[in-house]
Image (cartoon, rainbow, N blue to C red; front, side):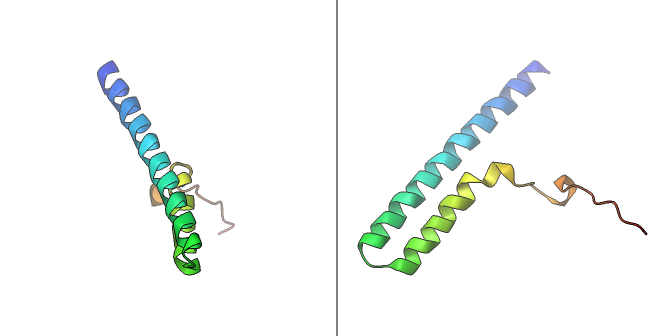
Length: 72
């Protein structure tokens, strides 16, 4: 069981590193697009960087969403 937990932690760490790399790369590409006068492309790269940097804080699927209490 501890091997599965360790493997899970390693995979989570690798995922975090990959998302960080993607975010950094998207920001670099955004800067390059800005320098070239491609404002729309720069904006899209910034949105990609934001998506990569917040990927772990967003629920993965509908089952992970908090369930709201309703009156009916």
